[in-house]
Image (cartoon, rainbow, N blue to C red):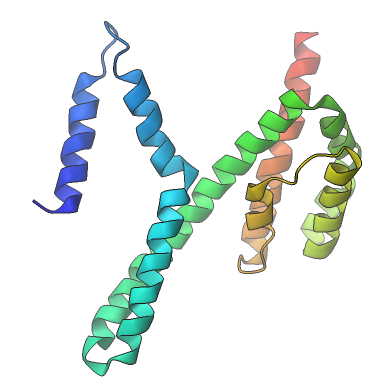
Length: 179
């Protein structure tokens, strides 16, 4: 049985265990989803595939396989950015709930940050966000570091920052509504 078939079989088994009468399946669902959502395993998997593709590219006899593998890698990169957008939104939401001082600091700068994002000024966005985190003595999130890398096209960069800021701004609006 191939790995694909095994994974599909295990996902089907997990799906069959899900029912409202029991919560024994909850931990398995949480752990399984974390594999897909965290992106760590996917990043490691992608790096391995990139190494293989580079090796195959050097060999003339495996040039076609190399092209096919690069296609798979491209689709994996697209899905990785989807995961990163979700993680950034969650990170923004978490920061807004854990650290109101940082949330307020970022909110004060949010219109300026959004304007710089719209203009495509990555460096200025990085500076503004780093300033907010460093003033409040907070660790800059790994997800934001990934999002700020120049390997992503400008529209994807905009989506990343909008997702992060959206998590923070939406959190503040919900708090105001609850008061």
